[in-house]
Image (cartoon, rainbow, N blue to C red; front, side, top):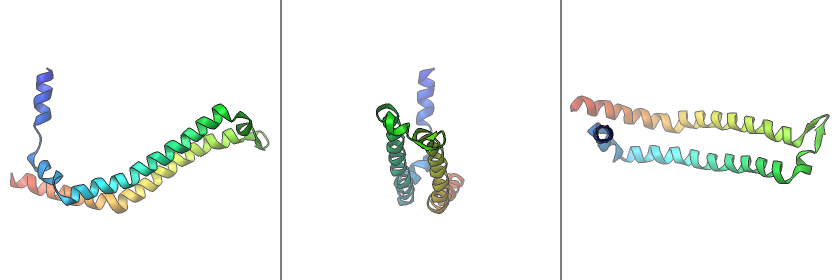
Length: 116
């Protein structure tokens, strides 16, 4: 059974190999990484700050801001807001920078499939 899966892994459309070698594909990967890596690092730093403060800065996190709302609650809610914000900015970035490149590569892929 594992040999069958191994054989399937080696079978793929040869058009993909030619697309993989193009400058457009490299540009698509580069544009994707240009957004994803910094956004991931920024979010992880922000999240780890929340965890760090929750564990080692209890006094700060227990600081009341308004009524019974404290810094910890605001930080926690901001985690959700940050997640939705990153998703929103990624969608816009993708529509503007990634999707046009992906559409072009898809057209080339479909054209290459017809030629084989």
